[in-house]
Length: 132
Image (cartoon, rainbow, N blue to C red; front, top):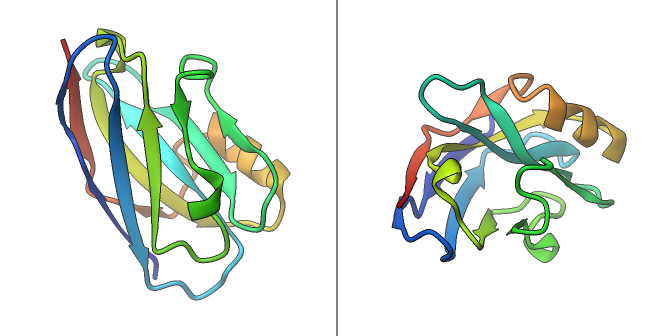
């Protein structure tokens, strides 16, 4: 099974930047959809950024597009660590951020996984980001 461990959570200032890391291990297959999902109290879980480890686009939620980036060079094959670089943060970005993974075979499945944010098999424990 894939093990995922997030780190880097904490407090950030509105308008500032912050980076989360996800350490991944235990891969059985190299073809996965992986990414970041967040959840705030009282809100539905939201897919933030999802990618296919075999290449192709990284898909972002409209709410973070242009502000959040997953560096592609660390998000290929069986990444030991991948990141979520967040900038121009707003209080609405306050949430628990999870990294997640599932088996998949195409970039199109990564896009589908973004919109069905609960449809991951493997989850990290989550890391809290608070923006004020």
